[in-house]
Image (tube, rainbow, N blue to C red):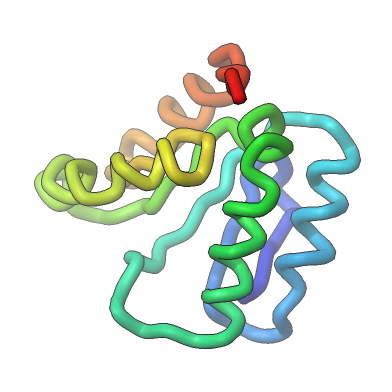
Length: 125
């Protein structure tokens, strides 16, 4: 998995090479500024060591991410699909410690701004 940080605070995630996600996420957390993770790739059945490691890292760093990661947004080009898929991805918010949503690309700017301006939810545990 590859993270592109050139559009900070918009951090784009893709399945392309080279795999740099761990070092980039560590650097993002260490700088202490809020960011939004974005992808155009729908979560699917495909598995791999990189995806498993990524998922485990997200779980292991839940408390740090809940402060710095304003949201993770899957960007789709169909508004009905965005609405429909949110019911399936919403439970990930609890698991990961930050909001996970599917958004229509026409709403992306508004959603990114809203999540970045929202106050981080502090974990009680």
